Length: 425
Image (cartoon, rainbow, N blue to C red):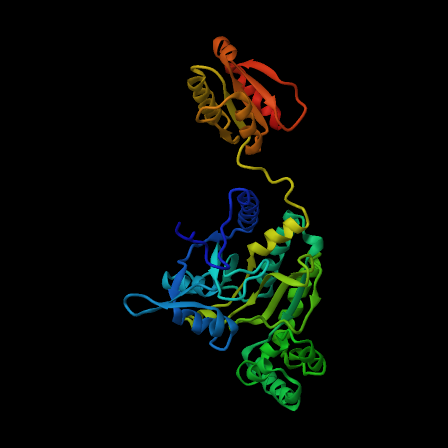
């Protein structure tokens, strides 16, 4: 017997029993972003490798270690997208969506990074991204944060997440700070791990994000980026905080947040949770005013975020917040006796015509009453619609409540569409 072909490690199937939870999450996301007036954009999964090297930065974990890059038959270097912002900016530039305009867009889809698979972190994972363009003021920074906060409320997890906020300043302020930070790190080089020593000269801000506890202890005495802010940056960050305060969104200032992508400036933020064991990030973003120009467009202010759906699904499961997620079936037909199949088909189509909000599964294939009832229970249906020889003769159907205590009743087919909704009130 040939060996079974299995999915690639870290690239998982979402099974029929799991998809209702995903559909619920995706539906809430669509509803929330629509309520803020955002429009959906859909980008290709494969892009030119050069796009991500220019945008993310060559001295980043993503570009150095994690991208799925290959040559196509024409010899062009292509990459499975590791994140969505660069693709969104590329699409905006290419189609003239950004210059001298205001845009609020969002997207959803798979991303790819070759890293060690673990719970909530996979090689193919799914993100929702929010990207706004053409607005330089602090109110849009606050809006994208408020949008994410509203989603946590809709999901019932607002008490299990914490907003961490920081500002990376302007490029000029950051360059001044980098020089002082490198001086500090060089003075403590003998205590740094190898990764921090390497980043100290290539991307020193990333040392602030080190997961090494010994390095973090050294950084307690490091210079602070906020000490190098000019009046404009300080005012912008203060306004972001004022908007969040006015909206009642709690946050903590975390000056170690630098984000893993080179294109960020000014406001950056992360939503973190401890509900998945050790503290983990479920949503992160910030302002990236230079990226549009960096990728060939006209200078355009921009801000956005991305959230990982696998982690949110895992969080909802951990907190047991998916108990109300409905399966794929509301009504299951059970047909017993000769010629009941035609009547069953007609009843099923009547329900689909008149009650399209209900999910109707019609039994196909032979089987006795007991076998069909087992299938009805397994389907997760709320109601069994039964047609036997007696019902066929009298032009009626029998309704059986499979999950509650409503009495079984036999009614005429003509009254079916009026009675069925009472089971789902």
